[in-house]
Length: 96
Image 1 (tube, rainbow, N blue to C red):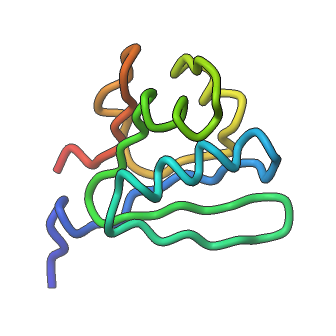
Image 2 (cartoon, rainbow, N blue to C red):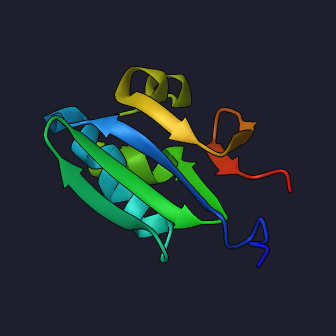
C-alpha cells in the first residue's frame, strides 16, 4: 500500500513555552486536520500532507507583530519539507 503525499503526515515539534502557545493555537486554527500531542517540554503538531503557519494568525493570538523567522526559535524539529517560507506564511509538505 502506497501513501500519497496528500495523506503522508507532516509536522513540527515545538518547545513548550508561554510565547509558543500562541504559535500552536494559530497552527491549530489554520489546519483543521492537525492533531496536537503534548509531551514533556515539547508539543508535536501533525497533519496529513500539509501544515501552514500564518503570520497573521500568530499575531492575532500573540497580540504583537510576529515575523516568520521567529519560528526558528520555537521549533525543535520538523518532518516534511519546507515548501514555502516567506514573510506571511510557512508551509511544510512533502514533495511527492
